[in-house]
Image (tube, rainbow, N blue to C red; front, side):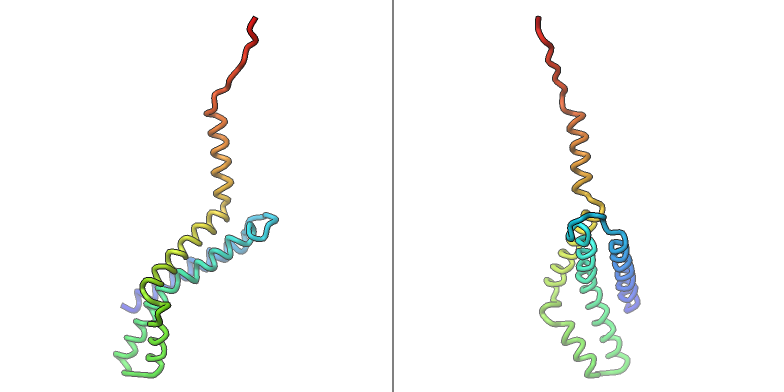
Length: 139
């Protein structure tokens, strides 16, 4: 059972950190600080927020496994005290995950210039759909 938590955490961390590296090395070539560094900053924050819940699950299950095999240890007590702080409660983890996905969506939209592409598509379709009125001079 612990292996599934290890695998989940490892895969999520690997994918998210690799995307962060991609956003760092291939950032948009724009003059404004936020336009250039925003996608990387948002995805880095997203990575941390999305890893909170899997890390807590992993830590708790490792502590339980250690307790079953080795008995009580003060390290287990200390780690579980931290893992069960109110800031790591279920509602908080759901909030962290939601904000993490929102940051990931926002950062990805900035990276691929989704707003600019939508405007370009809208302008192109609007210019094709707009009726062309031709006024003829009447005699």
